[in-house]
Image 1 (cartoon, one colour):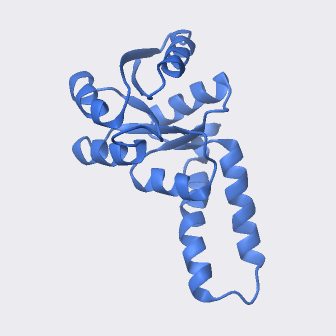
Image 2 (image 1 turned 30 degrees about the horizontal axis):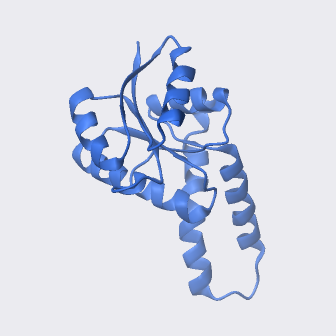
Length: 174
């Protein structure tokens, strides 16, 4: 069975590179491309992809807002956010918007292919570098003494969803 993919990124050269990489996978089919979030809405309606690969930083409608709108309209749509940012706030916003994956643009080809396969089956995939940072932050917070409860709860709300994703989707990595 083929996985139909839509690429959304404001950098044409980057889209072309990703498309060429994905063409080597027999089970992947890039059905459309868009250069920003507002264009994405129309492209998704026309092509009904299995997976959307979306840049986080784009003009007009950014990737997080576009993902939120797409999920509102197509509840079962699977979105992987691509970003240069490994900061927890970017990741949190992306996942809260409904994205099932978060990949850094420094990824290698194998990671991208694996992420698409996992997400297309209903799993979640977070770039290993981001996962590592989140686990370290979780450990740090677990060992901090004397911090205010409000600060701890605020940071826990950022880190906890990632720990849940790691545990809930471990079966997809075997």
